[in-house]
Length: 543
Image (tube, rainbow, N blue to C red; front, side, top):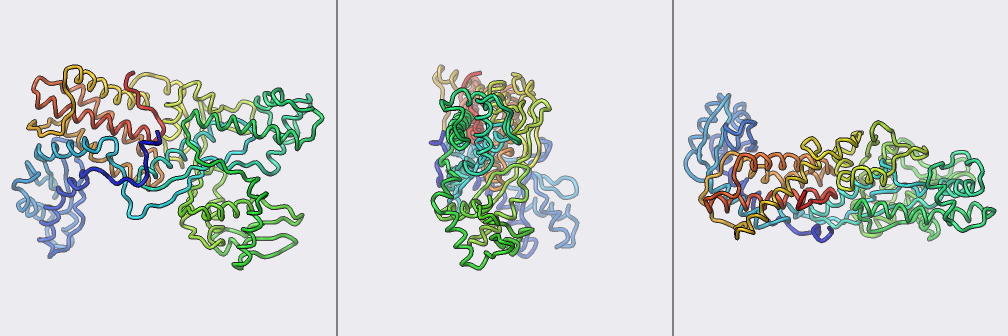
């Protein structure tokens, strides 16, 4: 799927210009009434399509400036823009809304532009192309990928796809926590299972520990260090396999142990010390993060001489920026709220812009009411979830809600083939569009670039206006790191398309009507496919 998400390609459609074309006459009329100074036009779609295609409340916002009744101002604006162009009708409604019904030619222009852009419609063209590093998973290799960590990966991968589609260079990285007490505890757990002993205190009792204990060809009397060195790579291979199955693309697998072995931790501490941000107290070495907004200073080297976990964090920040990345996105779990301030402060201590560090915190996941827990024997794993509901549903449901909200995945709903299941409903829209296009091709008809003379009916107008929203939706989703907005939009587009298909005959007897509706159908298919791809979900051609 990566070939569809090339960074740095600009928006290939003039649809944004076509929207601006609607606003320009209104802005000019408002400015003429206010001596050249007027608020934004702010076109919006009325809740009831019979009131027009778009409406503006600019007259209400001008009223305090002009000290006139909004309705009178709206009448004056309507008089100035009433004739010709993209407007088929201009009406004043309510306390001062200006409602616009658009001419068929405007819809023709939009559909032609979207069709010309294909599945690249909506791609971004930023003023400055950034080099963004997304750390999408950093779970310890002490067990299988749980549903909680799967949300981390699905969300991070989707953010990476969105940022890349917005025109930036993106690297996806997994931070492999292969150093410290936790991995040693994991090795000790595998060794204890092989030896038939009780789990060590705080050990890992999951089924995978028993599997590894049987797989590893090692003397049961070997040291814990030997068992750790044997168990961790095997566990990590399983993690890689699970993430690949979930379509989570990882460009770099980064080792924490390598930070220590390479001297990167020592070099980072030396750099921070040279900048005046490191001091000694009570036999330990501290980083003065409180000077940069952290709630307290952080220990780098403990009094026993061992490096604290935060020392690796400091070195990792230096390593990331040192590779040329100018934006760092850490995807962390709900128990890491304190990391937001400390990571930003660490960046500042190393001489980097703290605002270049983003730390979205994702909330926990339940499946049929079962709370996830890393060290519980009854943990629901990502593979178990994919086995139960499929890869597409897993990816879809894991990013359906904002990352800062908890979620419960209804397994029964996720496998239903009906409208209430949102992933099925959206995928079916794509399959239906492809079915129509295949049938048309069999009859010798294909989408065209126009021109058409057909006057679109309400269902067609609504569908075109929904398509027009896509560039803003996908740009906003990238800027806000909010893939759930793409899913919400895809569901709305699917609903509009299903109404269009139900109410109107796409393969109409009139060649002009048929040609327009076929092109509109193809555009819907392209956008649905793109939206699903941006959240790692497939778009089947048949269902």
